[in-house]
Amino acid sequence: MWLREEVADTIPAPVREMPSMPVPPASLEAGRNQHSSTKILKEMLREVPPDALKILGVTDRDLCIPILTYVFGEAQLGGTVGVVSLARLRQEFHGLESNRPLFLERARKESLHELGHTFGLIHCKSRECVMYLSNTVGDVDAKGRNFCRYCHTMMAYNAGKRGEP
Image (cartoon, rainbow, N blue to C red; front, top):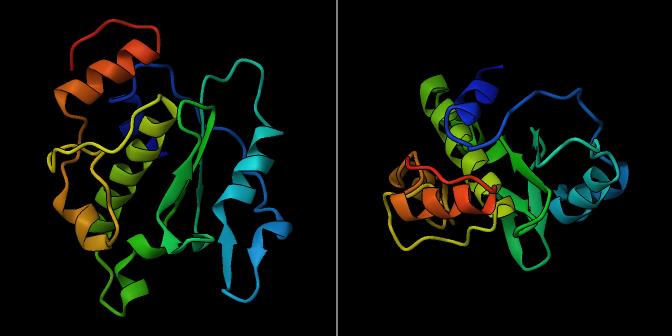
């Protein structure tokens, strides 16, 4: 998968693709027609293989948490699992014409962002860093596509490695 290769080039740990798992029916927030990212994370934790360092789920479902209208993803800070929604990263979601390269770039950024959280990274103040906070798809587009030097160093440290970007 394309995303696996993109992540493998950036994350200081081996990356492999796992079989799909269904989105838990109990995660549906029917009144919002969205899925609770927190409930999905809880289910993912039950499926973590013993040899896995981190797990990133990728879904087409629109995600939410109680205090926000939507989220692009959620992850356990310094934990094992994260999830990314592709729904709002697609131009079509916003009533616009499809743009595959833009969609793939957004998916890459948000996947790295959520994985960064699992490695203990918080939101970065640098707009050039993939860990910069994204409240809108425009924010996703505006931020950098890679970790800044500080975030990369911290992620490598937290992964038990010492390396430069």
